Length: 143
Image: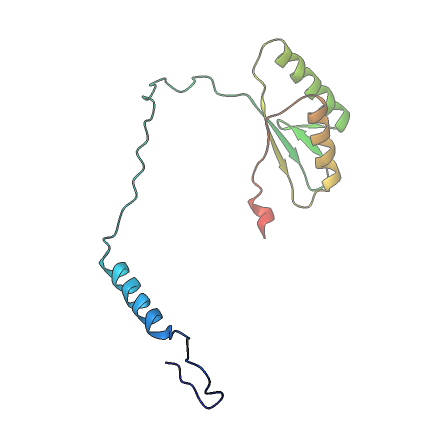
């Protein structure tokens, strides 16, 4: 509520007291919120019918590359150096060009190995257009 204290007594006070209006508005807002039913929003989607095709029978070829703690590289269990790895990638890319599927490369670096070795192996794979590369068993690096 507003109140005029002293001051000039020349005119009529023209200010509206908004406090009761705000109180009424808040009461109405709370009442509306409480009385509205809880609405579940459902979105209807027209999905295409499922196609029952069996999963592919062919298991993708994988190449396991392990980089040991002393930066030695193992290609599918056989020790190799960077030049040999480059040659292996080159021969795999030649097989891909002849129509075979590209193999998946599973890179498993040891946490004590140098980053430089893993980077060189990845660069070699990139130079030979290998695209399916993944790091395997990297949970030990999370600590």
